[in-house]
Picture (spheres, rainbow, N blue to C red):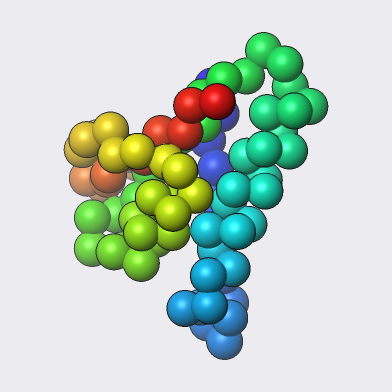
Length: 79
């Protein structure tokens, strides 16, 4: 299992770069780490743009979880 975090500079947001970076990063790490098969992301529920970026990168919603004392949406990627 692994967890991914991403940040996009404001001037580059809304152009689809987030989902591209997420997808390429996941594929790269899954290729290099043969024992890894699941990647998680924890996103605040009001961050709709981030949830959509992870969904476009083929993550599926896993439900609500607590992460660092915040309610988050868990997004999961399985290879």
